[in-house]
Image 1: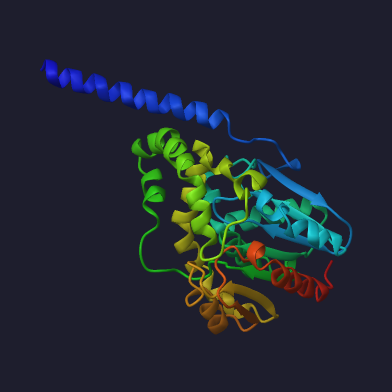
Image 2: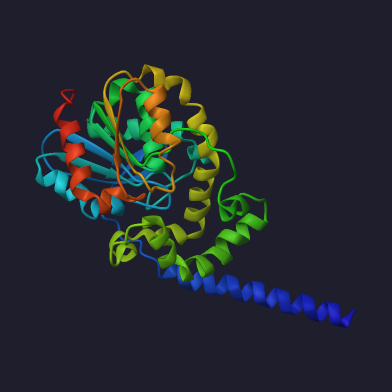
Length: 313
């Protein structure tokens, strides 16, 4: 019994020590806002709204925040004569998530439209990357009158076979998930973070100092990681629920993928080409998932061409 008791004490000490270490690491993560805040449907939304001209709304992907879009693309679009709004999706970056139902892409789309109402933006050109692409598609399906033009960058549009990345699954487990998000992920996740960034850009090289320049390490905050994991777990059913609405997307819109994207263009780009009459597919040979950085000129020009066709705002 003494041996068992000693083992229990050691385990408890290790678990507490890991939790304390995580608290120290989390305290050092960036929290400086790049923009301003608005109270929208009970949530506190963080966004940047700058520039003059026809509006472009940009929605970041999983694990990110508006800093990803503000790094280079949003400033370039402003310099080209556009009002550009970048947002932190609810529960990521510095936006709140008081309503757990906001893990659903349709709920996020509704919240973005409510923010647009507050900002006096009727039908902007909507640009979404990755999971943000799924949110932009949800806007187009459920709020078609509020999307003046659409550019889907490496976006998830169709359900896939298989499970989510195992840390996202563990994060959703009762009790175990709480400890995983609050103790293990801040320690292990931060230790492996730069390698994770490299894998997100693969097969192209990552931008030097990307995580520092975009403040994306914020996703290692416990509640933010749990929110991000919940988004990904809900995504498969979320996009499946959009599929019937793709037939109504008859106006031309852009779908842009790298041929080497781990978010399969064979599933998502091909699926939209088949199911959405207005889908206009651009495949960039040899490019990966982060095309808005690695294929900057091509992506910028596609967005500007789409915005030029938007006469709604």
